[in-house]
Length: 238
Image 1: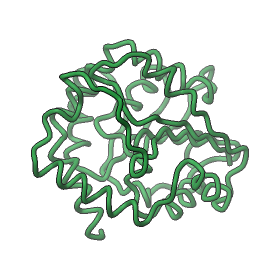
Image 2: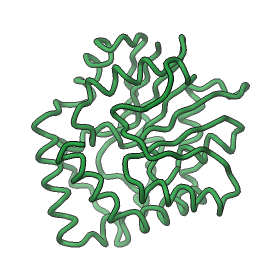
Image 3: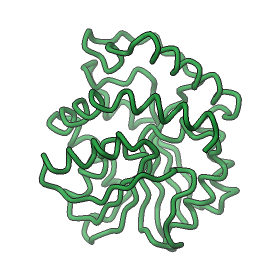
């Protein structure tokens, strides 16, 4: 693992406990249904799917989809996040499979999954072109990649935040680590989602689409779950 990945892993390890609590609260909020509605735009919910949740964190997407009856595997580079996901699974009575694994090189057989889902992950991947190519191999013919993310390293939002926003408890060291990670990733990533369109096409994906309106549908109010950076959804099929 290269130095930047180790730095990213350490940053998220330090945030696991509060991140897990925030995501559990989000599952109890109106955001649960809004996220589920977004996923339903692209997933055939009438049948049981094999889904890979890459960069699962503490399992938010895995829990949404497992509760709908799908077989879900969630992976994350950070062991502490996977421990948190397993802990949350016990609290929720759900049974996705969680594994510590590098998002850029998942260790699964080719054509294993019907769908891959991600949320706020690809901005943290130093080798995104290689990751997209490997993800393409994991999908079955007709399978779909659903990627929610934002242009975090370039977009500077001045949107107001509530007093209890998600980053309010970051220590000075964590804030400095995040700034260093962002600077390093800005050097290896281009403006998004425009860059993704080229990368996905080069990786062999087809029917590539970008939906910027999902941001307004999900984040309708400024609350503790609010994301000040506009997100987009990229979908692509094999």
